[in-house]
Amino acid sequence: MNNILVKDSQYFRDNIVSLNEELDPLASRSLLTIKGERWHHFRTNLTPVFTSGKMKKVFYLVDTCGKELADCLDKATADGK
Image (cartoon, rainbow, N blue to C red):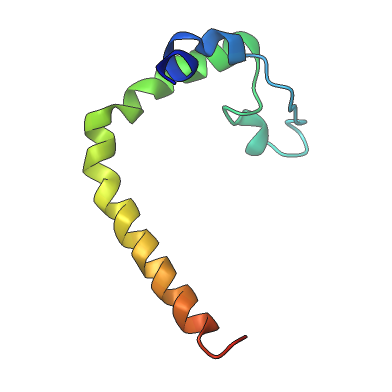
C-alpha cells in the first residue's frame, strides 16, 4: 500500500478524467483532474498537509461529525421515510 500511495505516485500523474477550466474552474483544478507538471507541483505542495501527526489531530473532528451524521440519519429515518 505504501508503494502505491507514496513511492509509485509518479505513475498516477496523468489522470484519465479531464475537465474544461472554463466550464468548471473549481473541479478542473482538483488533484484528480490535473495532469503532468501541474499535478506534480500540486501534489508536492499538498503532501505536507497530510502527515500522520496532522491527521491524528483532526481525527476527532471526523469522528464527531460522523457520529452526528449517523444520529441525524437515524432520526430522519426513524419514522420509516
